[in-house]
Length: 376
Image 1 (tube, helix red, strand yellow):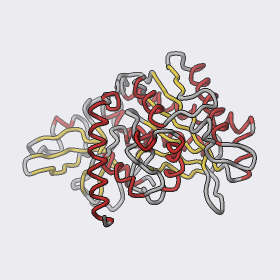
Image 2 (cartoon, rainbow, N blue to C red):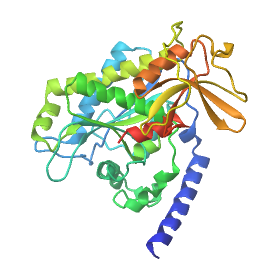
Image 3 (cartoon, rainbow, N blue to C red):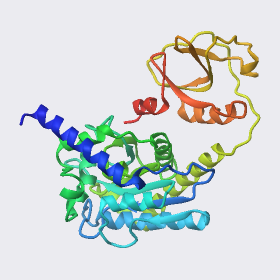
Image 4 (cartoon, helix red, strand yellow):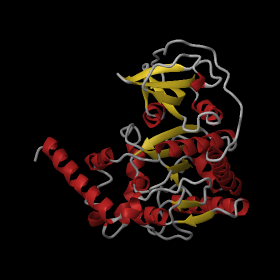
């Protein structure tokens, strides 16, 4: 069977497999409770038991991530007694990938945090990075994904359970092309909070937010991230991650990110503000090669004048023609996603259904599509 026909066959086979999984395992696609509070978080220490994960000169990944995970969970429980903290493991045991996701899905968790340490062949770099589920930059991040996904090889029935998925064969990753993460935006938001805290609070090297085809993220039905605390193959970072101060600092950084993320999503679901966004009038949309963010305040089947009462006190409203008989009206154009989020909070005091969209090459595209263009 040549490569082309092999890929076609494999793609159809995996599509059928995915259909069966979704059909007979409805918990994997439950609708998350999007209420005003973040009530349940699942913390997933990677590897465990006979799977040591990455191995350094003096330590194993499975031990470092368990320690940091337990510290993180305690901080959340101590500071947010109303939040239920669930661990996929609290001891040195191997938990299969499918069970890790099932624990989160069955608990209808609002957030999933998988914690790992990094490794590399040859010259070992340094720094932290946080992954969200995605396939856009699969080649650049394939080695990390292959290493983290290889845990399934420790499972006795992995060939049957994962439909012959081989984490070391690039063609196996065709299945991830089918998947679209409904929680991509929220996952990116949380991942950004984590990297910000690693950089500014823990003073670690920032390797940014990235996308990768990780099995454990693929199967979770809530905002999910996979955190790489540092490189265990780097002698300096290994010492840091094994030190009391280092583990406490890393756990605290993730906790601070959790607190910020929790505060923002709860404010978004119940904030009250009367402030306006100062704008300068601009008559026509301007095409740009970079990704810009803006707030869509309404859509209409007719052309509205800039002084229309429907725009309330907003003076700089731009009009995009979405179709022959439909126009979209936006405000607050910016290249700063964080600024767009703040703008949205203010705009929603006047337009409750407002939401963020992106402008790429002069065209409006969905937010998730725009975000994929600005992260690695």
